[in-house]
Amino acid sequence: MNLQVGKSNGRTYLTIVQGYRDPVTKKVRHKTIKSLGYLDDLAKKYTDPIVHFRSVVEEMNKKIAIEKQPITINLNPEEILVENQTNRKNIGYAALSKLYHELELDVFFHNHSRAFKAEFNTNNVMKLLIFSRILSPNSKKKTYEDKDYYFENTEFSLDDIYRCLTQIVNFKDRLKLHLHRQMRSKFGRTTDLVYYDVTNYYFETDRQDEMKRKGVSKEHRPNPIVQMGLLMDTKGIPISYDLFPGNTNDCETLMPTLDKVKRDYDVGRIIVVADKGINTADNIAFSLAKGDGYVYSQTVRGANKELKDYVLDESGYIHIGDNYKIKSRLYPREIAVSNSKGSRTKVRIDEKQVIFYSADYDRRAKAERATTLSKALDLVNNPSRYNRATSYGAAKYVKNLVFDPKTGEIVTTKQKPVFDESKLREEEKFDGYYAIVTSEWKKSDDEIIEIYRGLWKIEDAFKVTKSDLETRPVYLSRNDHIEAHFLICFTSLVIVRLLALCLDNKYSIPKIVESLNKSSGTLLEENWYVFDYADEITKAITEKLGVDLSHKYLRLGDIRKILGSTKKS
Image (cartoon, rainbow, N blue to C red; front, side):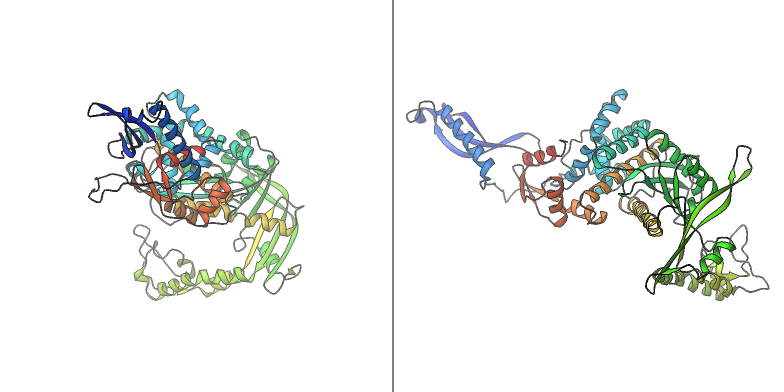
């Protein structure tokens, strides 16, 4: 509030007014709080009315600030809605802003964008792209159209967004390294144990190029894909990633990713944890040559006869209850490692093999197989309904299947398709059994299993990127924009997983995102917003991060103070 000195009927008139910015015209408007009267009349009572009432206004402002006195808002029942005006805005993203600035991303983008001398503010564009990727993932065009959903400076164009995508690719490796260093210095990241996995993302196109290639899709899609290798710490926060052409085998992605991290990230000895797709002789030899270790799952059904016999041999197992048993051994074996001449050299390694059986896993394996078996039986009885693509998974349980090499259709022969009972029985023998191979022979069996079980965090990360961040399908066509898209998704994943960690991992990421989205307010009048949602997550954010999401009514100035507080580290 302030004191307004005006003229009325040729006389000076004093009024206490409150200013606010009109959301449509963006101009400052005033409403009268109290009419004080004419200056010459007031001078009969006060030595200097202007000085006196300015001190009164100052005390009123202090009282409102301290005591939060009720205020009066004037609502016009005849007022109509203005087309395309964003009356509802989100404040939940303040939690994301807190971590964005804790990670000093604003400083990074300011410093690294100077060389480009762009007319747009890189930091402002990146905030919109990252916050929207978490809260409302969409196309870049739709994200731009919804930019007024946030209380942020969005004075840039859609073309600026695309220019920014081209710009940030130039320092993508420096950004990943910056995030790692921030995580290490501020959040206690350690890298003596890391998790690695590979997934792929499909494109909404049939055209292939050097990056978009057709390969083995995790989602069994015919579209071109890109492979991503992701490295994660024990807290579930991504460390780094690399993209590979879609036709790259999973096992070929580890060495380039790990080599870059070992070279640039200043890490010591690490133990790589990964599933059986990464378990190759070359990857094992690579880790050992670097002085590192590994914990890999080992296929049982696809293992050699010696390991299969060891798994099924009851001797040596320690039974824990009726549903779980475990055993291990130190086992010397030879692996064939690629050499510089293009051939393979046999190398002897000593590793620990840990075998365990779980009745729960046994039941799960049979339950997961049930649908496939039902499909296989239908395939036997109605082969004309299927082709190579639609019989995927079930075909291995059917003998005498012949596919046309061109069309993929099932070819009719004298030998009718029959269900392969022996195949099923062989597989069932190993239901519930798991094998882990590791260089860490000094660790106990339970430690090794616990380490390996942590791999679910990276599998969950892939689920988050695909489902919650909607990383795929990818609609972008230019490779620099594609690289930028994945960089934004990676950075968003770091922030949202870090937020979950700050909330003690009590809430799933979908639930956190839902709460943040619901933490939105509607403009009433005169820069006052009413917020209509709170839950245990918003309460935890207020308590753990110091980002106050508890108020029902807030002025625009108060909202800016809350957001401003998130930018102070």
